[in-house]
Image (tube, rainbow, N blue to C red):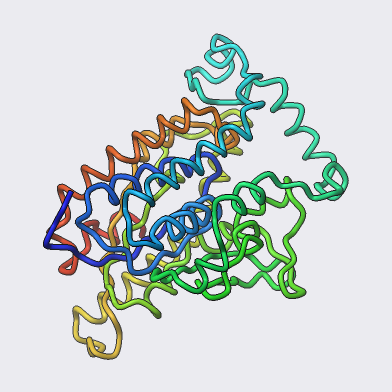
Length: 346
């Protein structure tokens, strides 16, 4: 869609394994619509993979090329992980054990359950001594990192967690590499810590999912559009061990974002009340593209499900939610937040 009125935004892309296909759908629709220009992208884990593939696709300023390469990337993810989908459990077992039907859950997969148990007993240094990670091959075949570092117009900020210091590490577009993306997506029970310049990193979701502050410090646009993967609201108290683990996972991977939203709210109130001069601090406008209702229907095990039907389902849902958000809130960009930060995050 050709538009003469284009607004500049920053994107904040959450991580969450195969659930990152929801974010793929969000990006796909925003690219197709054409009313927004991406200045900066802060991303973690699966969000980081989406971000670097997007950067590759936009090198020639072609939205169609970006959409094509994102689709190609997720097709490769599905083809690589197809073995999991071949060992799904029976639907009636899922209904009996959880009281609800999630057709994309792997909780009743014999293969998945066996592998999950193995990760509780053995570390990736034991069961994967050669540190094989199929994502490395997919990224290297999809992205020309040298070209992205030298030519991209996007301001990229990829988050990883320093294992030894507990500090956040932000890799920008000049220091981006395949190792940086793998570090941002390194789940410590599945993969060995990624070494970069003598330091070791795990998944960035533990400390920034995603980090908002780089967008505040280094970008001109005041609008931050967050593509959520991990549901913030999940009704009901989890009772089974699987449900408890699932909710702990969601809370953990949302905690850093919640803290940053509180800080943004605090500064915004200082500016609104003229306690601090507006030219001293930049007021940020926060927007959310999310579907807690959809994402809450999927268990934590489905983050490992790369079945193409599932990925396409999440992509379609992401496109649907992105369209609804853009149609309802395009006029808010550059003017105000489209969510009540206090109500949503405090």
